[in-house]
Image 1 (cartoon, rainbow, N blue to C red):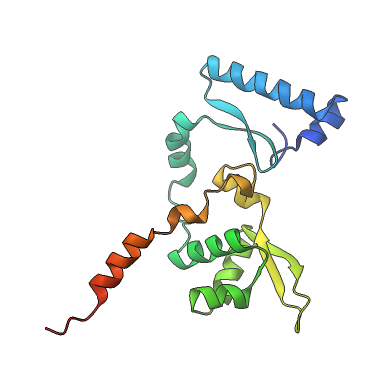
Image 2 (cartoon, rainbow, N blue to C red):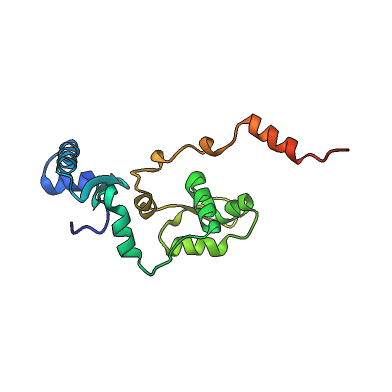
Length: 175
């Protein structure tokens, strides 16, 4: 309850002087108990650790309370940039700009300020550009444990028949 983010199982194991496997087993038991008792909160595994959070059934009420009067949504440009960083990381600003076709300096700064991305490495090539990746806060906001839990990019790409139909619709007819 006092942690400001998800607590990794290995840290809980050290604190409780038990194995990480025992922590996972106890967490599963606690999770099942909370669900059976229909509590308004759950113990969930997210961003590589465990955290107490609102039960999904009451999310809307908590969100309304917390966000009353706030409009901190990400722009379409920020969401596009974040998706590129997420799926291509580690990636440089220049690579993101090449994919998007526009300058992304301001958007990258915004995503860094919000804590969703960070410089994770340096490109060994000329200039040693910063390479960006997502943060644990990003995983936490999405409610996933790791990037492996993201849907495959292939799920968002249309099949060849759809591409053919789109291309056919864009052709200029000679009539």
